[in-house]
Length: 126
Image (cartoon, helix red, strand yellow):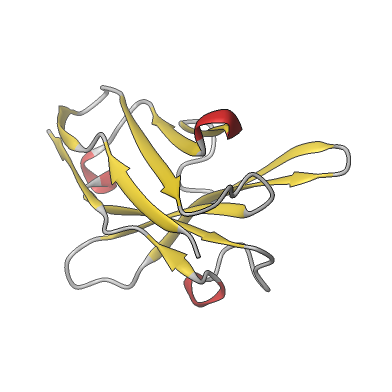
């Protein structure tokens, strides 16, 4: 049982930065894969990025649309995962969700994640 709560959303100008937080409770999820997704009105939920822990260390994977601009990090002591967003564009506007799963069958498919937060709105103005 894992409960996730996102925070840090808001309004930012194009070119600006924003950091989202996803705090987990219920049990530690340091060994879980953590994913970030976003959904704009009228569109399907879109994969943003994911982070996992392996035998050799952390692993991250990003969608091409955000690669080089967004960074996922984790603070396992706080059971928190972060999404640092830089060089924001109006097309980044969406509700952002964090998700977690013990062992997702696919890192980039929303259906693979068992636990979800409620989402936080990010609006980027031009």
